[in-house]
Length: 124
Image 1 (cartoon, rainbow, N blue to C red):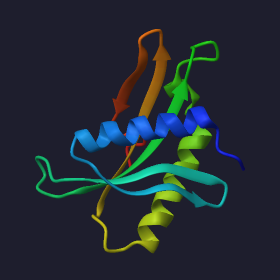
Image 2 (image 1 turned 30 degrees about the vertical axis):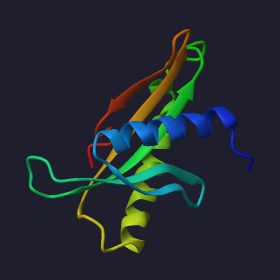
Image 3 (image 1 turned 90 degrees about the vertical axis):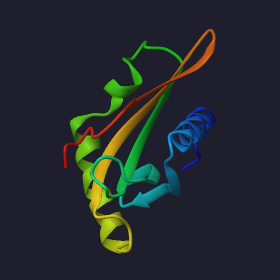
Image 4 (image 1 turned 135 degrees about the horizontal axis):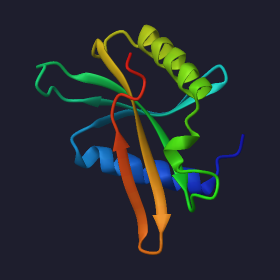
């Protein structure tokens, strides 16, 4: 599959945004079966004292014609992301035990990209 240039640009913006928040990006575009995890990162310890393994779904849009970027993450997409995240953790065991799935939307408007970050969209 040929990557969409807009999606690639959105992922780059999201990765830079996460780095500024202290995330360490450890993998990009990880494929497991029919699902791709856009960004895999480690977020340093916060209140819990433990680092968290974070799987990030990035959605990039230039308009809301078909809904907002975050509305594009369906139940089925989330379900496949959870399975892919569990597989990733199983095959990369030296990573933090705490895990979550976040979503980052990159919405372009007349002034450029606007980033929105939603933590723990799966609750797992």
